Amino acid sequence: MDYLIRNMEENEYSLLEDFLYYAIFIPKGYKKELPKSVIYEPDLWRTISDFGKKKDDYCLVAEYNNEVIGAVWVRTVEQYGYVDKDTPSFCISVLPKYRGKGIGTQLMKSMLLYLKNKGYNKASLSVQKENYAVKMYKKLGFETIFENEEEYIMVYTF
Image (cartoon, rainbow, N blue to C red; front, side):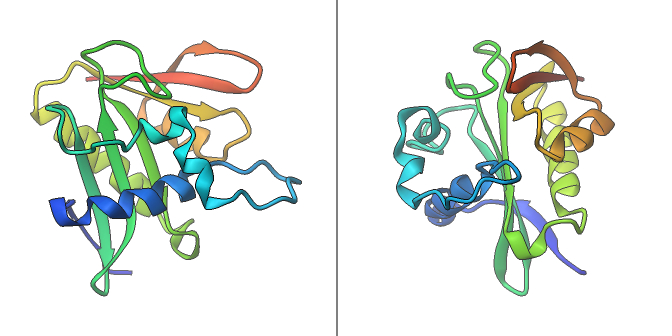
């Protein structure tokens, strides 16, 4: 599959609403589909609210056949995975029909390189323990710095 990873254009920021929705992890056995309005819950909404207006807002997308099929974005606002004001926190999402093809891994690697080139010392994320992506994050070099019953807070150090 031939796809392009590129910076998200400002006129595409509205796509983050869909990608935020698809970033929500649904545990196995959970029967109920979440309403799209769940993204407006304050803890979720702050991951995209006014995106592009803060100095540490960066987003890369995967594009295939002129369609954005995945996105990885970071911010230093107090959101899931927040560590401190100097550490960008990750959010990532790939459209369901394109998952399992390595696109998420490539988006993560691209953003890590982007952040390294920008001079950051570390990056962080939050992930639910049941999420299959935990393995990918560990393979990329993220290390757990905090955990509770449901989630890990992980950090990548450059």
